[in-house]
Length: 113
Image 1 (cartoon, rainbow, N blue to C red):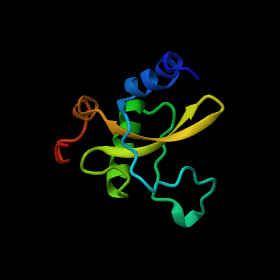
Image 2 (image 1 turned 90 degrees about the horizontal axis):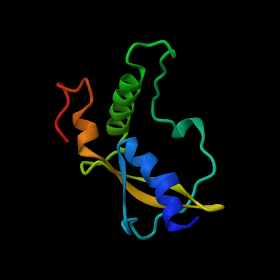
Image 3 (image 1 turned 30 degrees about the vertical axis):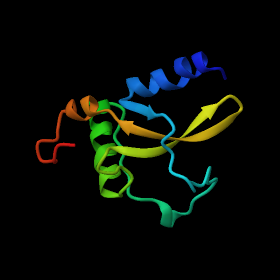
Image 4 (image 1 turned 120 degrees about the vertical axis):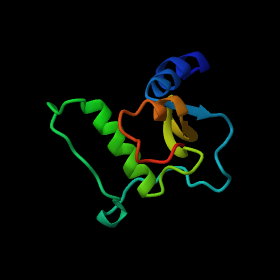
C-alpha cells in the first residue's frame, strides 16, 4: 500500500472517526500483535439495540467511558492501534481528536480532556 492509498484507505477514515495517527510515536519495546485473549483480558463492555435513539453518540460515549475506566486511553488521549499496511499490519500510536471529545453530547459530568 503506497502513501497516497494509505491516506485514502486508513488515515482519512480514522480522522472522520475522531482519531489521528501520530507519526513515529510508538514506544520502543512494543509487542507487535497479540493474536488471542481470554475472558480475563476483557474489560467490561456495552451493547445497544440498532434502533436506539442517537445510537452513534451513545456508542461513542460508552466507548470513551470504557476506554478511560480501563486505562486504555491515557491522559493525552493516546493509545496504540493495529493498522493495515498492504498485506501486513503495523502498530501505530494514535490520538483521539480533542474536537471529537468536545462534541460528545453527554459529558458534563466528565473532566475535560
